[in-house]
Image (cartoon, rainbow, N blue to C red; front, side, top):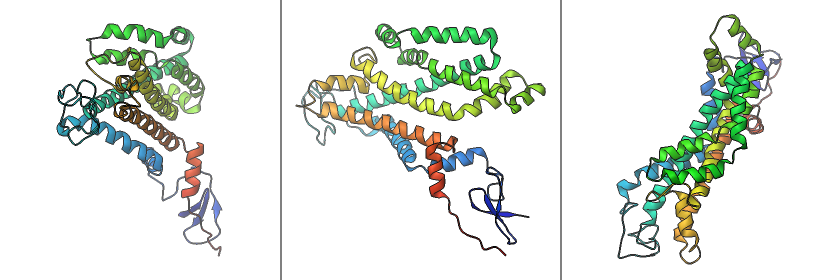
Length: 330
């Protein structure tokens, strides 16, 4: 006998009859065979703010990457006939005190800040998941050793250490600066993942996998980490947004991206002194910084609701999107 879904946990036999209550999560013909990935994608696409955030990030990043193809000036070129000129057809965002094109500089800074934030978020979640899952799953001396490293890094003043080391990287690849940021961005997440792993390792499906002789690496990869995906996604988005702000702050004080390269932080620093008299030096970089961080947060909220339908946003969208109707009984 097949059933038709008419509400949350309510199904009606296809041949007629009274509605019957079926536990939530029981597959029906309509949802049977739908993979978890498709369900997550479907929930994410229902979130308009998340879609707006994702589209904004993609457009901003694509614009920053492709701008050298259509921009009239490069970020390291100078127009010695235009100093502190307001936005015009020849210089879309105006020019700086030494004739730099602000549009080209802003696109270069946006590209660098977004890239640093995304790479740091990726590096931090990889380290946090490996350390947290390993410490929580194996326990014993592995747990004690890894948590000692975590506690040591947590008590170190990361901002000051980065501020001291980053100027020494002047002339080196900016990837080293990304690695330096990633080293100090994973400890709290690792502690949270360790606690979740200690709970998950006592679940029946993990014990069954152990009983069947599955190696520990496979259990962590196939059973532990996927069950923490919601938290990991949220943490990545938070880390990306926080890293963009951290990099901006470090660059503002001269400890982040070093000349001749630029980032949003260096542009905001250079334009803040003349924000009232020549606002184009400050507003474009500052506005793009705010938009980028907001877009990252919107994407994070959407992914959280898509991966965890029990969250407040997921329940609210599920209720608003569900259509129920009364089915007459025979």
